[in-house]
Image (cartoon, rainbow, N blue to C red):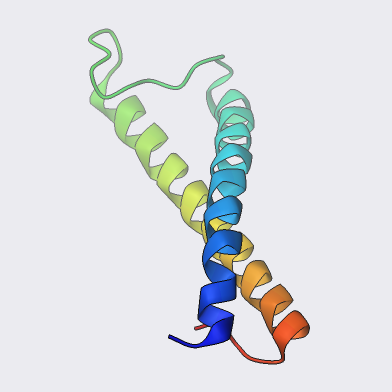
Amino acid sequence: MNAPKIAYRPVGLALGAVSGGIAGAAFKRAWKVIEGEGDAPDATDEDRPWKQILLAAAIQGVIFAVVKASVDRSGAVAIRRLTGTWPG
């Protein structure tokens, strides 16, 4: 394993935790805008319709994927700037 990959591991772990928090906050805000409610439904919420549960899951998945890709890419760019080599 080369040095940039090794250097990126702790950075990637830290960025993963940060991206989860960012994505969670973004999803909560998006859900309030879309549905006007405080809490998004869980899959086991008996009182929520399928449509609402699946919509929430789809939106959450998109937000998490976009935030994760953005944060991972930014971390890789930072490692390249520090080491001169892409960590991938």
